[in-house]
Picture 1 (cartoon, rainbow, N blue to C red):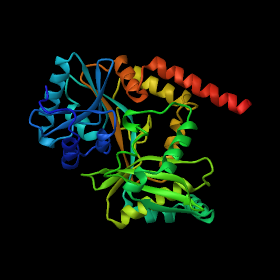
Picture 2 (cartoon, rainbow, N blue to C red; picture 1 turned 90 degrees about the vertical axis):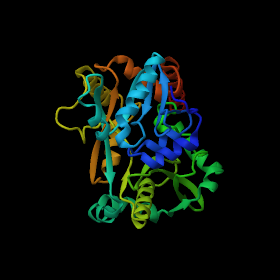
Picture 3 (cartoon, one colour; picture 1 turned 90 degrees about the horizontal axis):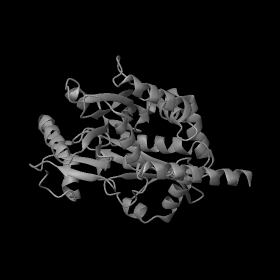
Picture 4 (spheres, rainbow, N blue to C red; picture 1 turned 30 degrees about the vertical axis):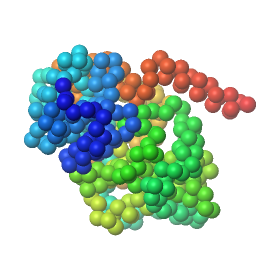
Length: 353
């Protein structure tokens, strides 16, 4: 067992800035995620436990030369606790470490589009639709500025926008890697805010990718009255700022179930691939997989990386799917399903009322 308290956020942050390569690594510092530390204190893993499965946020964060030892130590600790391990949202580097292991299984879960901010100006010049959306927002009086963390943390307007945005979704608020309530965790993050007629109407929250010279677009939201083009102007303003500061990578995060970056011979059992195809075809009324993919890829990323889930088992099992779903639901799945029914019943009453 790790000898370091799992309530050491300072050490976790220090290790994230020293060793993280996964674009979501900084998100292990979000509320609700537990921290496991190696006995040597040189590695951290962020996870939550669900259905006797440790659902890990990305890959272990450590010196690459220590990765095999850290995996072995963490999984031994989980075994002593009679728990399995599911590494969610890992990239090609980690998948390459375990791809020949008889004790691990890998499945593809989507793609991450990436941009080099230094090439953003060329993308805008070549994309008439994007230029139109940016110009349209500006003609409507939308302006974007960067808001200091100290001001953002106390902003009632930003919280109201977030609440409005969540209320328009068909699902209750999700957690784990898309935790919405992070305005108290802005120390290293950057916030771009759109205003119109001196009223805040939208924001884009970015988290650092410390060892990739870049930023993750972690969360953005807008109120119902935002003019078309507001989100495009936010993206444009952030990309322009990061280019000016010589950052090299930006990602808008995971596009779930996307095949844009899948290598030949897609990993994962046939039943899981069939489930993902079914979800992509039928679940859009609740979670718009296709719309999310279209939105992110319309900005013409420079390249994409595949994202995977890895389990410490020779076979990927149904319990792993339930554990991941529970992690994002933040509550028992039966309760989450009931919350979905209630939320959409209320939406329906408003529409017919």
